[in-house]
Length: 124
Image 1 (cartoon, helix red, strand yellow):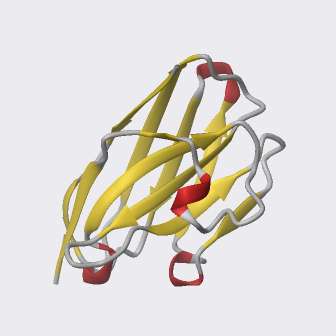
Image 2 (cartoon, rainbow, N blue to C red):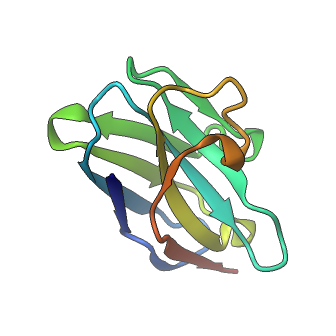
């Protein structure tokens, strides 16, 4: 069993920054791929960024240059640094983990473990 707990969400004005954290526990190790997804009301859950066990990252075009995913294997924690936030970034942000990096990493269905989410609200 793997447990994922997100933190760091909140409300900010456009142009501001937030840093999300996801603490992992249970039967998980640093070989797992980890990622961030988000879901806005009335929209499907979408990939934000994914990081491999070796630190290789992939991210959605909409956040490139603004968001950075990272991980601290010693702490079993991953992070999402979000800069230059826009109102369209408003969503519930979810942490995800999988024993390896799925081929179709941008598809939420390919990740096995999920946190409960943390809300990010960006006002204009």
